[in-house]
Amino acid sequence: MDTVINDEITKVLESFNDKYYIDKEINKNKIIQDLNNYDHDLIMSILQNETLDNLFTQKIMDTKILKINNLIKVFEMDQYWKNSYTKYTKKIGLTSSGKFLEETSDVILDFPYKDTVLKASMTKEDNDKNDLTPSEPFLNEVIAKNEIDVLLDKKILSNAKKYSEEGAEEVSSYNGESLLIKGNNLLTLHSISNRFLNDFDVIYIDPPYNVTSSNNTFSYNNRFNHSSWLVFMKNRLEIAKKLLKKDDGVLIIAIDENEVNYLGVLLDELFPDYENHLITVIHNPRGVQGTNFSYSNEFLYFVFPEGKKVIEDRKLLDSEISLSNLRNWGGESLRTDGRNTFFPILVDLDTNEIVGFGEIVEDDTHPKQTEIKEGVAYVYPIDTKGIERKWRYARQTIESIQEMLHVVKKNNNRYEIMLGKNFGQYKTVWQSPLYDASVHGKQLLKKLVPNADFSFPKSIYSVYDALYSVIKYKKNAKVLDFFSGSGTTAHAVQMLNKEDRGNRTFVMIEQMPYIETVQIPRLLAKDESKKVTPFIYIELMEKSRGYIQSIMDAEDTSELIDIYSRMLDNVDLNFQVDLQEIQESLWQNPFKEQKMILIKIIDKNQLYYNYSEIDDANVRDLISNSDYAFNDSFYSEDEV
Image 1: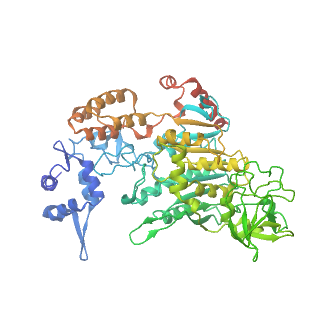
Image 2: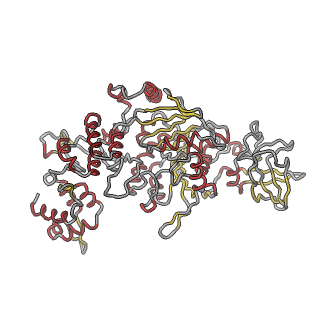
Image 3: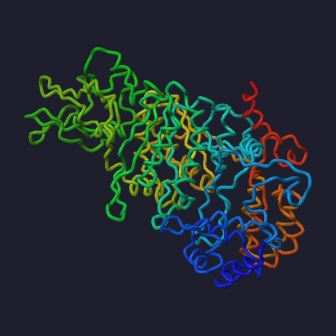
């Protein structure tokens, strides 16, 4: 490199004191990062340097353009940075045995894969951009095609346990039970893709909303650039689409104003073969202060295959009868669990219009016939013989479709509440006090799991109504949620099963540790609104990811030295790492920098053990016999 450029760059960097140095050596990563982000102070210092200004700017009309790519290339030149332990970062070119062309005469072509894969840990990002990012330090790391094949290959499943109201027990086979899976959701989706290909009736997800930093109070990674967020979502939706039933599977995505428009464009691209596929529902009243407006709603995207309708009430649609009695007259319609389905509907005596709904009745102290009070008829779901029946649907549902109900007056103050044939069509604005997340989300979760630490769990009814709208008449439906959080989607499935004695199953995927501390106890908690059935908990078997977490949890250098010693024997390291140079310089850095370097040199494509390794001697010793059998059972259908 030209010595003059070297000297002038050094002057600029030294003007920032230690900002761009680590123990007197250049921190190339930090410089390149700030150049990419057009850091105001750094750019201004470069432009104010006459030599650098002449070399790295170009005047077009009356505007001075900084040739930022040329400047970055200077900082990537190995001759200049030969003493930097980060000398290979972001460098792409011709390599042989991990060394670049200028270092060897043996050459192969090494190129990045066309489509970026964003693994994106859900662990929360750091608040200070200069601090160490926890478990996913290099979010947009570009990896080669053959490495992607390894990355997305199915993983070994470990710690399999079956949970029921009686407790937990080891399990050695899979027979279609509901699942809770702990692991990175992209890698988990690919692991289960063959087992559940074209298998789910509905996928409901509540992904990271990608909120601005000022509103980012979530306990997980919830802040990306728009472009990174779209890659993050695209990777997951592409594989999720393959898991939906082709004929009538429905995808539902909850989102807010930050990414609703970006997501809509992405869905249009990913689902071009779905006719009239994209429906946007304004949903879930709330209050979030924006810059000029207060946001009072969120959104639901419904993605339908051709011909699919919300709420296909086949008994009505296939009949010429325009009205159906709201009372449930079937063999199972006797009042046995009237928690949500036994209450009076209030009818005005003069207009015969519904004017309200009475309190839910849980005992037999109510009148045995229609009661008249101050010009209003209180109509109960009781037949002419005085037998307690129940309404066809739960109270919150009937309230939401009040405009679809009709009153037919009979003799002797008898009233029939009739349901119109058009019940199958929802409005695109859903409003209900039941969507209040503070009451039916946070308070409900605290009731079931007192120690749960969740700022904004979803209202159970907002998820319940979304699922109800597409699988009400599918009592054996399968539901997937790969951003399962506190377990609201699985809880809503339990509620549906309680309401109609269904056997719907769920698959929940979550990387964060609260899948164990919150989801499991929530789904096992006894509550009159839901039906608890056995489910299986499993984890992707950690490999490098376990070491990353150990590094993050380390409290001093002595712990890191011990971890590094074990890493050398057990962890796949980045093939470009110069271990001798790392060993000589690593421990001279500040403690946080030691952590950053150790995390950096781990091969991020080896977070979990691949299933193909399960019979390797060193791996087999780590797996219990029951887990080994469970893997064989779970993946056996892949070979068919």
